[in-house]
Length: 66
Image (tube, rainbow, N blue to C red; front, side, top):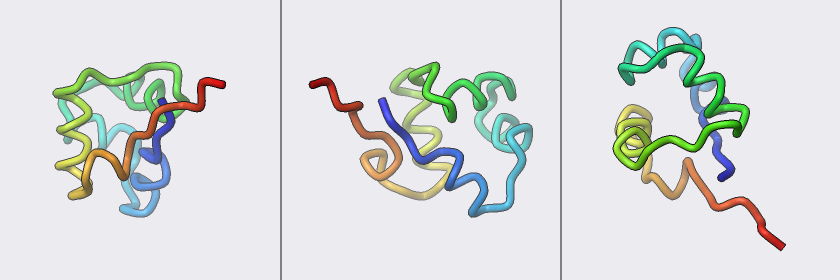
């Protein structure tokens, strides 16, 4: 799954540690999500969307599987 978490975090001038604190996860989880190594659970994806006040579809999109 592709995402724009890093871009949104940067836009808000938040560190990875700050975003992790807001979401209740570890900084390493944020790093893994941003790098696409980890797809968040649905509840976490919704928390991310609420944190950035964006629809979940604006943050996460399916990776091309051709």
